[in-house]
Image 1 (cartoon, one colour):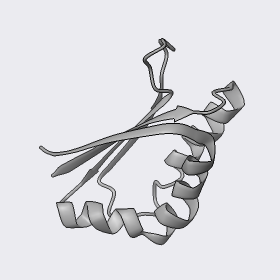
Image 2 (cartoon, one colour):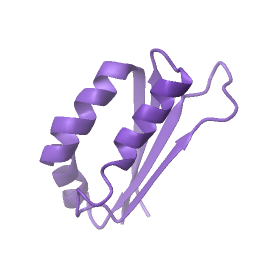
Image 3 (cartoon, helix red, strand yellow):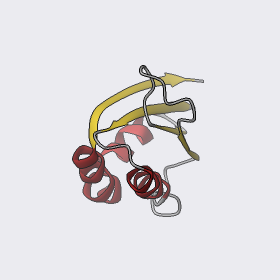
Image 4 (cartoon, one colour):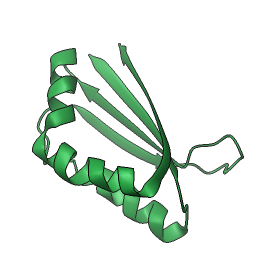
Length: 96
């Protein structure tokens, strides 16, 4: 199993932007069959070093993670939104 964790720092972390971005990420549920787990959390500490939103997804294999990256819904709907609203993005992928 592969775990894919992404942290997003929004350019304008207003309540409305945080909620809209969280909902955009959650909208992948049911649209991308490769996802074995989908979890989205909004940071509650809001410290200087914090990112605003965390995405945790799991896939059966590295090949499925790679297929997810180019999936039409992910690449065409989610990625453009994230690039438009984020000032920084960091990711970690690991086997578990």
